[in-house]
Length: 50
Image (cartoon, rainbow, N blue to C red; front, side):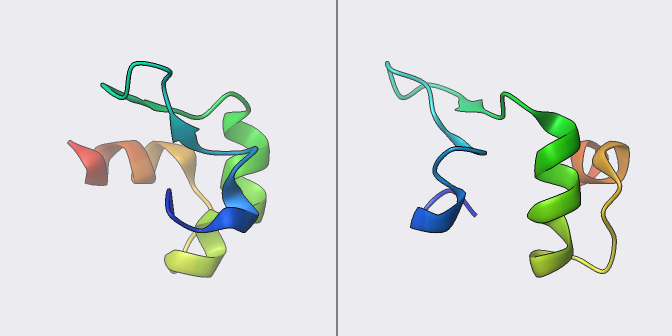
């Protein structure tokens, strides 16, 4: 997800490279999650990260 240039505005590394930034979670969930997961649920995505 992070390495895909088409997602650059929706998900990217912080300036210091220590965390992932997703500035618009609703837009990210709607447009990006369905391409990689069987859902577009932000909370499910966050749970999977943990």
